Length: 454
Image 1: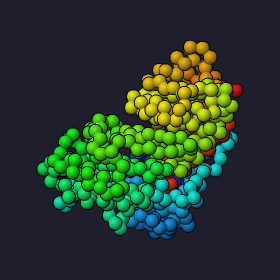
Image 2 (image 1 turned 90 degrees about the vertical axis):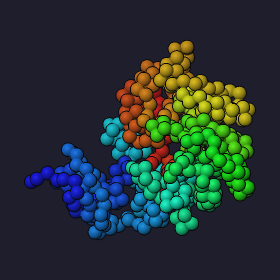
Image 3 (image 1 turned 30 degrees about the horizontal axis):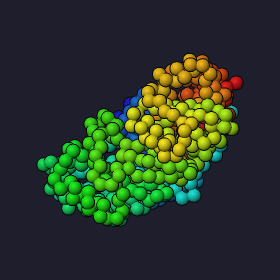
Image 4 (image 1 turned 180 degrees about the vertical axis):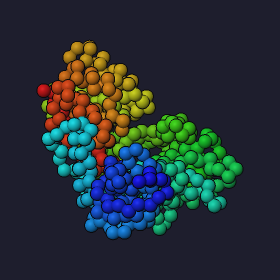
């Protein structure tokens, strides 16, 4: 039988969902990934990529819909990269994510029999995001705000009155419309030939205070009528502060460019779990405040603090988890690589009058071994690494110096399973895993896991 080629069409039954929310089927012994397909679908798809063990395909037609398929709420769902599973009812999304965590532990971590609790979902899985980054494009004579299409740097969703983002806070949706109109009022000063001087516009809202920040990321520090634009944004009555940020090269983190305040204090304030947090333009802060509290309460439960423990919060960011735990611990030490995040963490500790928490700037893999070498190690270690998981030497340090309790917070079930598999093979018991749905309508799932040294 001749080898299948890109461009050929196939018909297949969809059996499962991948870790990226794609439909999974089989064709002549190969796995086939079909975005936008759901289990139970019979589909016609075009092959776009041929690999030795799998095919990547594009959905052309749903011949027979699966029993769980539903109509997406957003008309841009098939184009926009912001959501992945809107075509599944929310209860099915939750089942899929719980299964994804369990399957990852077994397949990647080689862990069987681990207690995976049912995922903690939301009562209302819509309009939960308190932060968004809109890309700015000069299109058909106008500056438009939009979100990238999946796997592309082309816009797949444009902000319009009849096409607002269904996972974004409603007030931020309305503010985006106002900002787009204002950008076009000042369009002449915001264009460099036919290209926009603005790279993106970031909106962030504090749930408890209602304060809102607008960040204008531009390729120049100054442009004509800049202060007038900031003044009009302030005049809407919806904006607490306006910050100009230097846009950075595509291969760098988008929030690392230098900033300058155009209006207001240059930061906003929010409350979470009885704590106050000051958020700058570059601060990392979870985008779903409702579920963030759920997650941090689970972290606190797993830490099992009595007021006598020494805690290390590795990859601590702006110190949110460290401050949560400091109220119930003897002392907490946060470790973080980003100097801006450490400065924010120190400021947040002062705002909350917490004197038993401190922060070290540096790589966790470099600093964590030194904490053990100095003498008695911590009683609890919290790991909250980036998506790629923990550096191997961090895990080796924990294997060499057993810690009574380790709480692992992860945004990627695959790297979580890999790291838990290592720790389980080096003297730790995986007690239980609690998935938390921080990002409804997407394939992303957060997990909180408790390990104890045996």
